Length: 142
Image (cartoon, helix red, strand yellow):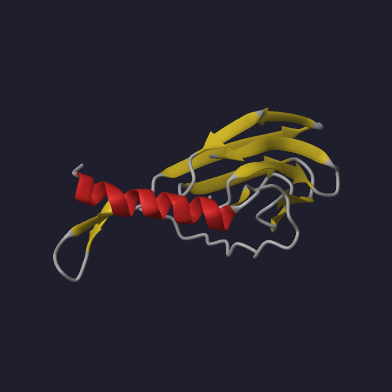
């Protein structure tokens, strides 16, 4: 990358860091709009004919049976800007809550439930079964 191309990249990085401030589970943060539409192609043509690269996607799959959590558990690290596709399957009805992003989705026994969203808020956020109070994983966005 040339010095001329580096300046906008550094300015963008600085601007994002300045606007993000301290990340955490700040309840005053703007809610993130979830989407269930996933990018199926790595790039798409722009009106000028150039190709734009779609954000990378990080799949997280968790299973809960008999109160035991398996799959992608512990601390899961995702780069800022990457798309997260979270799927949870449980043997009991509950609701999944992604702290910090203020996202929730219901779970029906034996049926996968999920949400897809852009990981735009840096920090570490718990993902839990709301009714059971069971922590499924910690999402670290950096």
